[in-house]
Image (cartoon, rainbow, N blue to C red; front, side, top):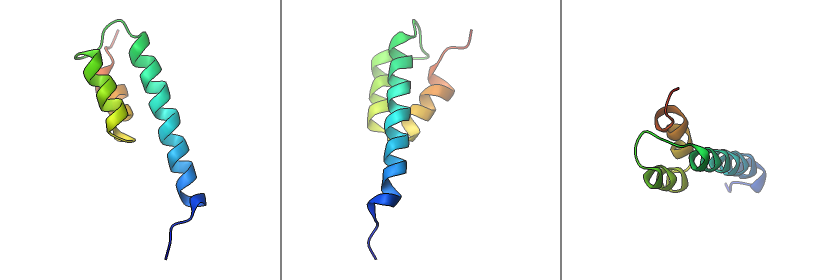
Length: 62
């Protein structure tokens, strides 16, 4: 049984959109919880969970 592209494409698209939004948000933020370079690495290297972690933990509350 092989996995078809139709099953993978939506997950890949979601991950790409989420990563892009998180990276833009991280770059625009003046301060984050922790160093920005570390959050950028987490967003890029940990698929799907990295951007979610950034939005939950990384952004400073105002």
